[in-house]
Amino acid sequence: MSDGSHAQVWVNVRREEGSERNSAQILQAVVAAHESGQLGEVLCVSRDSIKTCEVTSHKEHVRETPTLVQMRAEAEEVQAQCQKRLDASQALKPQHKAQLRTWHRLKGALLHLRKLDAAKLVAAAQAKKARGDETAAAEPPSAPSAKVDGETPPEFLRRWMGVRDILKSKLAVLSAVSERDVRTRMKDELIRQEGKLILLDQLQEGCMEWPDVCITVQGQSVKADRRWNQGLPDPEYKMEGGREPQTVDEERRCGRFCYFCATLNPPIRVQHKMVDCPKRRRANVREFRPETMAKARTALQAQREVRTHCEGLIHYGR
Image 1 (cartoon, rainbow, N blue to C red):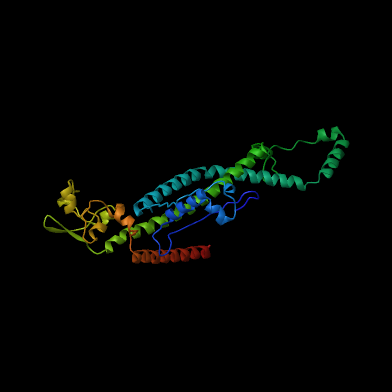
Image 2 (image 1 turned 135 degrees about the vertical axis):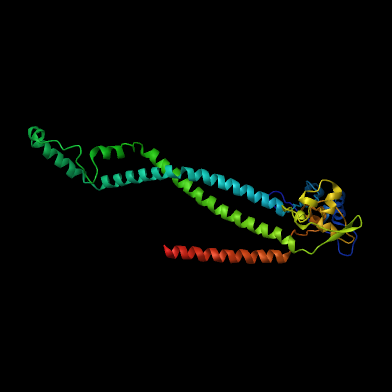
């Protein structure tokens, strides 16, 4: 890479085929060649022409995938925030409707004024004045209650005197339109989060289709609690009377041990949930099975088709 006066040479290396030297050793050899001047000979430049020679090791960033429990909590939080924002916007809707009506009345009045012929109005006023003030004074004043286009003059004034500031009215309209867009976005986001929660619920509930895994606790075979391992409420097993276990031994007897670790060879009895299992994460094993995801997709697709059909019927009925 060159900027006109300087050139940068990037060298990427990896382990040599059929050799024991790794990439770090090869890079160190490049640095040694630079210090001895051999690197300049290879590049056909003088040693002083090479200003810098740096070695940077490769970096690897590993980001853990959030668990189903974490994704569910996040979706519920987003759903609550969207619902709160939607409720606040719905509370402003009546006020914004009134502001929109005011603006459209004002806009209609302005459009009506634009259509009037100002020259004819001035000529008519001058002609009326030329007829004499006596005749104009002799004419009986129109009754205040006389209606024009279905409105008396006081009613007309009450309706239009409230629209004094056009800019203020326009800003109110922009705010109303903005809130309308907010309601649309919040409704769409609520639909997305609802679908996400339905999918997560089906993936978590799919644990009930897993085969039973047993370990021996105090000479007795105990099944792993699959719902507890998925972080779901209402575990499969509880103590007598339906109470929650209080001690470590009681938790073991209720199957509160890692389902994944219990499937290893040899099985390991560890009292953490499968969703939190570090061995499962290192092995890159998902919390659900492929067939569970396939069933969830089929169910969501069927639900989407039913909803689309119902929306089509509603639109047709209108």
